[in-house]
Image (cartoon, rainbow, N blue to C red):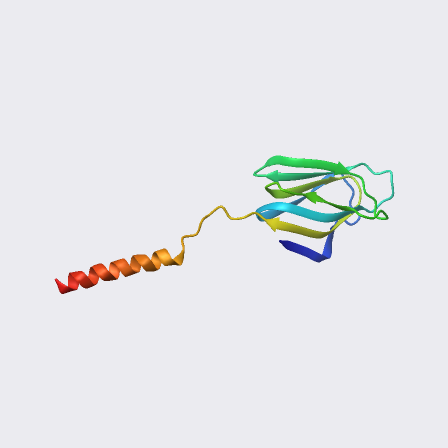
Length: 130
C-alpha cells in the first residue's frame, strides 16, 4: 500500500458547500485517512463517496471536529478509483493510506519468449544443415 504521511489536505478558509475530489491513477481496494472538521459544532455532516468509473460504490457521512480523537475513516474490500468528499465547513485530511488493486493482467513469463527463441534457433539450424 501507499501511505501519504507528513502532509495534509485542507480547504483553508474556504467553506462549502463544495466537493474535494481525489483521483487515483490505478484502482484501489482499501483507503484510510484521518478527517477533522476545523470549526466547532454544530457542523453539517461531511459525505464521503468511493467511486469506480463514475458510479458510486459506497458512501457514508460523519461529523467529526478537530478536538475529537479516533477520527480514522475509510473504505475496505471494495474496488474504486476516486474519493469524493462533500463539505460545508473547514476541514483537513491527514495520514491517507491505500492499497492498490491486484493487476488483472497476467504477464507472459520471459521463459515463453526464450522458449520461442530456442525453437526458432532449432528450426534455423536444421534448415541450414539441409
